[in-house]
Image 1 (cartoon, rainbow, N blue to C red):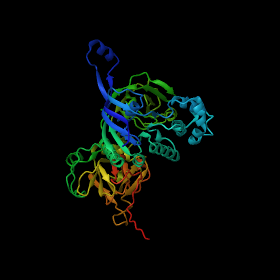
Image 2 (image 1 turned 90 degrees about the vertical axis):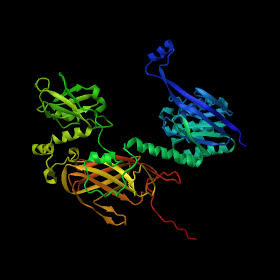
Image 3 (image 1 turned 30 degrees about the vertical axis):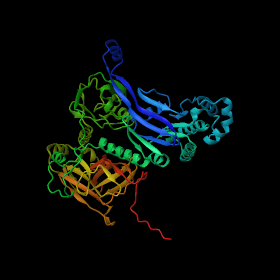
Length: 577
């Protein structure tokens, strides 16, 4: 029977959270509670024995690192019992204790002393540390010049130079090349075979399943599962997939009316359809609340034709490096909408003529005739709507007056009315109002099993009649790589034959369905994109009628093992001797 190394009984860790620092003083004087408790860990009980390699998994903030820090003695528990019967060595954060200004060799000595070695012992082990780290050409350089992978090599080499009885690793194995990770993994396995114990936090399910003897799954500070690596990892993977879909898709229900997806003769208004046909993920943008504000003079003279004003309260809705065309702000001169928006500052200064940019907390703009807005006796105001409405208003402002009037009155329009206009998508002549994935029985599917038959549906509301239209779906993996693309202009049908389907887009609601006999994607998380365009206008997104990415979040699972591929082909194996 293996000896018990760690025994934890009803261990908890909480933090007192105060709304403001003054509440601490008020609580002290009044003796009345002014705080709430945040439970990082709650009633954790477990036992770890000699020779085990225990993996710990959970989403960020689940409590994994807090548990390891308590075991390593870096944090004190708020309640409960903890006993450890072995000497412990922890690698919590790469580079902790390193001096960036010192060389690699100097940090080896610093790290060795921190784990209880004398200078003589470190000197004796120095050749082994250098060989294991593979950094012999870099050890005379300052650590501040090291990459994260090089820091990982140095940290593990120092930690491994004396075999610990209990080793704790918090996600540090996620950094470094595969060869070095394999080297560290072999060292840990050898250590545990000789009676050592290891506890490893990682997000690499494949690594944990292959190398650990047991896995513990923590969520919201409590143990959800503790057992065989494959079973616990699959439970965590499925929970994460469900959470991924739930957080990103705001479907009203988890059931739909059972009928074939193509049985739509006369579709009602899209809002009624969305409420009646449960399971549609609505793409209607959430309104930020209409804001109308008259700008007060004086405006600051920026350069040449450009003037500026600070709008700090609207900075959250502005353009930035990460979102260069995010701002939904519209600028009016008297009752005329100015534009174009999202312009380069140099263009506003040199060309002007009503161009503007809402960049971070500043609005930089020019008058329509490049006059001085402080003296031209015109009124300038801004409106802030949801992004889609702002884009449409900007686009419609650049249309001929006859088209603007026709769109406003709801007149019947068709493809010929927009001849020569190359910014169709912002006009929202057709909009994607809902999207969903259903199985062969018409039931909503949020998590797809590899090989399952599904139908992906998109509901479109159109304001125009547009002949010779094509539509298509694209699937992207979690890294943003396109994995699947299929459109009606050229696709492979269920009989593996090339096929095509052109259609006329009609005013009102239309549901587009793509039947997939077997979804042969690898396990993972995916995003869906939907597009629709004139068959002659497929190259640029703004020329398309619709392009929404992402329009749906979905996950694919496989029950038999942890999978790290994006495509799983349907094949038949045979073996002959």
